[in-house]
Image (cartoon, rainbow, N blue to C red):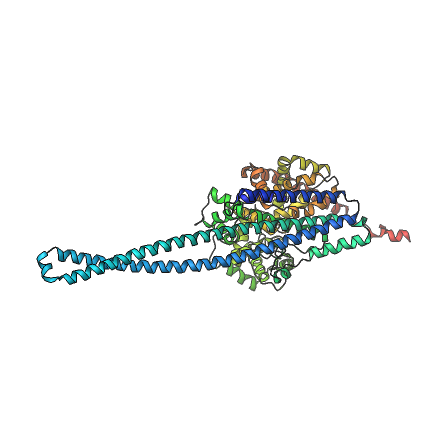
Length: 618
C-alpha cells in the first residue's frame, strides 16, 4: 500500500547526510501531519459525497495537488542544477590551489637543499681554522651569513603562506562537503517527491478506475467526462514532457531490456491496471533506492571472481543489477554447459542445408514472441533473425524435442540479457536439458503435467485456506499455472520482477518456480478469498499477477515465508505423481485399444440403414 505523507517525511531524517535540525524536523512533522489530516478529510468527503459532481470536483482537486507537487519538484531540480554548477567551480578552484601549493612546496624543497649544501660547506671550512682564515675573508662570511638570513626569512614566509593556503583549502573542503551533503539531501527529497508524485498519480488512476466501474449508473455527461479523464491519463506522453525540460511522469516508456512499462492491452481496464502497477513499482524503487538498491549494488561491485557460495546464492536471490546480470548469467551457463567449439556454427550450417520439420511452427511463433518488447514487436526487429537461428539450431541439437511452443519465449529472454545468440543458445540448452526434468517439453508434456500435481500438493500444504477455497468453487489452478512453469513466468510477470525470478531460477533450478508460484498466490491470498463466484475467481486469476506492486515483498515471501522447501521432497513428489500419471495414461491406452478392437469387430454399419435428421424431417 502507498505510504502516507507522514511516513514518508519521517523516513527522511534517517539519512545521515543533510539531516535537518530538531526544529526543522518538528516543522516537517507538523506539515506532514497537516497534509495527512487534509488528505484524510478529502478522502472522507469523497466517501460521503452524495452526488457524483462532488466526487468529480474532488478528483479535480487531486489533479491540482499533483500539479503543485510537480511545480515543487521542478524548483528542487533547478536548485540541484545551481548547486552542481557551484560545486564544479569549487572543484576547479581547489585544483588550482593544490597546484599552487605543490609549486611552493617544490620551491621550498629546492631552497632547503641549497641551505643544507651551504651549511655543510661552512662546516667543512670552519673545521680547519687555519685554512678558513687563509681562504675565507670577513666579507665573504658576511655575505654568506646575509644570504642565509634571507633564506630563513623566505622559509618563514613560505611557512606562513603554506599555513594560509592549508587553511583556505580546509575551508574550501568544508564548503565542498556541505554542498555535497546538500546535493544528497536534495536528491533524497527529489526522489521522495517523485515517489509521492507516483503515488498520487496511482491513487488518481485508482479513483478513475472506481469511477469507470460506476459509469453505467452515472448520467451521460458525467460518464463522458470520466471516459475523457481515463483517456487523458492513459495518453500522458513522457516524450512531450521531456521536450519541455521537465519529466512529470517518471515512468519511462520502455525499461532497460526494451519491455513496455505500460503494455498496450486491448482492454481499457487492464491498461489502467498496468499504469497503476508501473507507477507503484517506480514509487517502491525510488523509496528503496538508498536503503536497499544502492547497498545491494555496492555488494555486487565488490564481487570479483565468481564462485559458488551461500553468500553468492543470497545475492542472486536478491536480484542481479543490470550492469552485472549478463556476466553472471554467462558464468552460470558455462558452469553446466561445455561450449563445444564450432558446435553452434555447425548446427546453423545444417539448418541452412537441410529443412527442419519444426521450421514452419517456429516461423508461426516468431511474430507472437514477447509482443510487449520493442526488440521483438516488429518483423524487422534485429533480434527476430537471431531468435530464428537459435531455435533452429536447438531443434537440430536436440531432435528428441525439436521445437515446442514456449521455447521461443525462453530463448527471447536469454537473447535480451546475453545479447550474443550463441550464448543465448547455450542458455536455452541449460534450461531444457539441465534445469527442467526430462520430457518437460516432449510431445506429451508428461513431466509438465506431473509438476502441476506436485504444485497442487504444495499449495494445499502451504496455503490450505486458499486451496480449500479453490476446491469449494471447483477452480483448477493448473489452467493458470501450467504456462508459468512451462516458460518460467515469461509474459506473466513484469520484467523487473521476471528477471529477478530468472536470476535465481538459472542458479538454483525449478524449485525457484515452485517458490515464486506459491508466493504469487500468497501475495494475493486475501483478495482471492474475498471472491465467492467461480467465474469471477477465474477472471481475477487471469490478471492478478498485474496486481503485484512490490517485488521485494514477493521475493521475501518466496524465500523466507515459505521455508523449508527441500529439493529432496520435490523429487519424491515428482516420482510419486509420475507413477500415478503413467498408470492413468496406460489405463487410458488400454481403454482406447479395447474400444478400437470392439469397433473393428462390429464391422462397418450399413449406411443405408442410417437415416439423417434432415431426411427424417422431410
